[in-house]
Length: 259
Image (cartoon, helix red, strand yellow):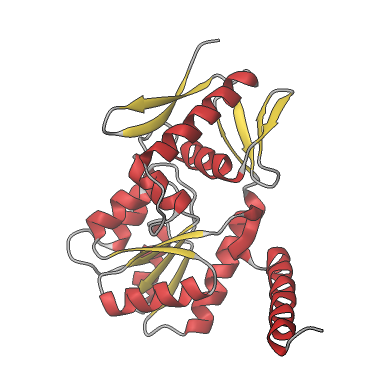
């Protein structure tokens, strides 16, 4: 006969299963089998932390940069599913960051936050590359609705990422090259996605560890090296013309190779 504790535990697990099942079908935080990554660039630390906590509770993987220069460097990695930019920051402002991101031909959705509500300011934000513009003080319901809308739109537009003759199907985790294909494990998929999105830009081992294993993980750089080795073999097996190049103390990037 089951104890009350066992019955409650079973009930909690059963309910959690249904919650996960529902959100895997309906919530953008689990699109394509992965947690969606959001970068918040906001110099007001209290507001930045509030947004981070709110979005983390909703299941997003959130990183915060508290100045424009740091935010630009993070954004250039090309590993985020959404950027949330404050407009008025010391040094580099949100308009400039958006322009630099778009100059890289990066199509990541950009949500701009500002205390300015004048029409000219909104027009400037949209012209600099923002997809949507919210004025402060923020309503959390509107913020979440905008984020979900932008991510749903992005998810419907991007089904795969490519480099050279090779593509990664984001819905099936299949690495494709012509008629050849091979399935990737969860970690291989996350690392390959980061590399394909970054292209010929270097990704450090620290960045890969943080994005794939998480900041609180006990994983070390050797874990990255092992999975890079797995990916290199799979790329060779399907006849890919891309190679994962290691640069000492810099990390990894993709290069095209003549076959």
